[in-house]
Length: 609
Figure 1 (cartoon, helix red, strand yellow):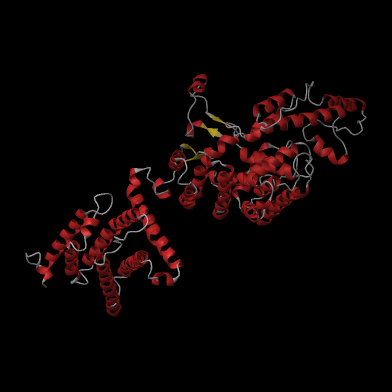
Figure 2: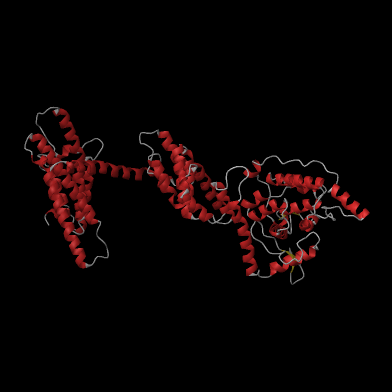
């Protein structure tokens, strides 16, 4: 605890402090579910002194010179352990009380009632046992701790004289004693139960008592214990002793696999298997086993819930756990929540998936029907934000103005898919002979116009795809071949678009059944696609002018076709939603300015070059 500096001043070295996540439950400030579910501790009853009947038998034997058969001759706490091999023990009444008393102590330990069990030891005239139990308290020194100070408690004590520390200063040595006691075959009393619990829940510490000659530490001098523990801690543990100890403990714990359970679920129950694997530090093996086989069990939802929370708890206390196993189990638990209709919990557990959280929650949002309740869909997105998920990455939504631009882009993608792909698939499903029917003429012509449109649309898409193939690192031969393909496709697209624009595409004056409705539908289609084709072709021609200079001339020549009253293309620029004539005129203006890039002040010079 203290070291002397070279200048003679005494400096204090702060002891290691456990993390707040683990220290709070250990010292009993936060009762856990084990404490809450513990049964009420038994009451051993009152006693008149320590082992009164055994004490009377010992005194009677010393007075008469005759030792009572089967009764110990001494009354120290280790007398039973020393005399156990000779078949001696306490008097029957004292042995019965001792058994009930130890069961009551364990009941208080199980319920987390440390102060009550210490008080019970004092009432039973066993202060040494109370002192041993107090060894579980973590050492705390408020002077060198970041923990908040209790002002009321400070007022009640002298702060100048008090050292302001509490707990077990030699807790490591106390745990070593528990360790050696648990491994001692002679000490197989009721104390063995809670000592085993101490070993199972604490980490492996020094072998401070490994070289103590006598197994009874009650009669050993405290300095001997401290000196032995210090010598062991200061040196390097012998590897053989270390491996022997670890193997002994491992075998002892593995033997629990064959121990039958007196009450409750059988030993092969998944929860018992999980407990043993966790104690033996085989968590990864346990999780892989669950992933490979336990899904088929009848308790699948309950087990998935248990393992999901086990993974999250291990992450919370910074214990290593397989990321792949954690992802598989959390994914399974999300499916359990969806099946159970507990959608309000999905965002919270999806957020624990790390890099896959956004993708998984987006998949969940995709399960909502578009015709579903708008409030529920908005609430699902709100939960994503509450649990640290980026809404803009989770979903393309129209609920937030910040995502309007992306939503608009995706809407256009969907519309293009429905208008292009599905209609094209319908045409491909039809027999080719259908396009060669001469009668009825108006229907055959309309069908031919649809095929013409999709051929043009595909050409324009191929132009865009070919343009995207250009790479800065192309060599000269590759670039020339690419430019030749690019120029050929643009020329084909220009010719086919002009042909469509100048051949009365989807214009019909034939008198047929439901003719008015048909004419309205065809007119609406022209108002959607004629401006779209014109502007797309114009953009391709102007955008390729740096590689194909004559295309700026073709773009300006397209204006004459649009303005020609014979084709009535200006009537297709609707004033309703969609492409308007102002949009096209603005694009033409940009093309005229682009024509001046080569110099000169005549905007029409480009048409004569």
